Amino acid sequence: MARILIIEDELDLQKVLAFNLRQAGHEVLSAAGGREGLVLASERSVDLVLLDLMLPDIGGTEVCRTLKREPKTNQLPVIMLTAKAEEVDRIVGFELGAEDYVVKPFSVRELLLRIDVVLRRSRTNATSPATVSFGRLRVDREAHRAFVDDRETELTAIEFKLLLTLYDRQNRVQSRASLLDDVWGVDANVTTRTVDTHVKRLREKLGPAGDYIETVRGVGYRFADSPGEGPA
Ligand code: CA
Image (cartoon, rainbow, N blue to C red; front, side, top):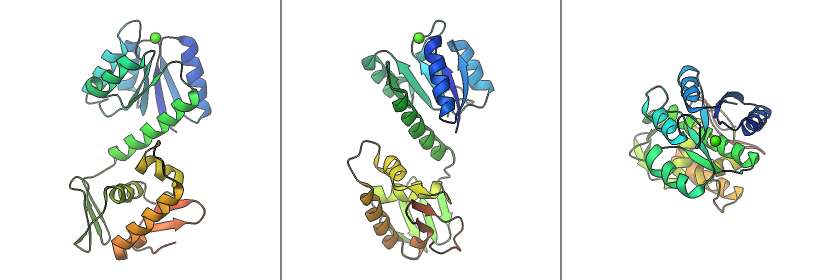
């Protein structure tokens, strides 16, 4: 559930999007032009922007550039809606810092999935202090180093990401499928069994701190909400 701003001048599409986003449990704000969209983005607390590239007043690229420049909105994730894949590839990747894009005509289902991924990612980034200190565990995010009782434990890149993904949603159960999406990526060719294997190895490497990762039978995994708690 998030508050999503749609900036799109094709009113039919705007309405279809708004309807589907509400169905998916989101709150929706709509603007038919870039100027109005920028005002809404800076005045209302919005979690994500769907931004059409071709707008009547200010173009989507300019809107995106402005959003990413202003301190009030520069953390706001943007998904571009565009008619042409090739032009937006360059724009999104190098110039504007948009998080993702879809090419019209797109399936609403696909868009909803992309929205979920972008929202999850942005929430994690927003709440991440540089160093994690939890009971016997200490993690330096930038240096990619983990310590248990002040002794370093060597983690692979995937194990490191898995640990932080679990930690950042402390006390919330992560299903194997969502861990696959977040740690390995949506397109990765791995099975949920892979998640179990990696969690097992991660726990072994963490030794006593491995107990902080709890198994929720039949669902997935959860990082304990306090270091005092043992495994589930
Ligand atoms: Ca348009």
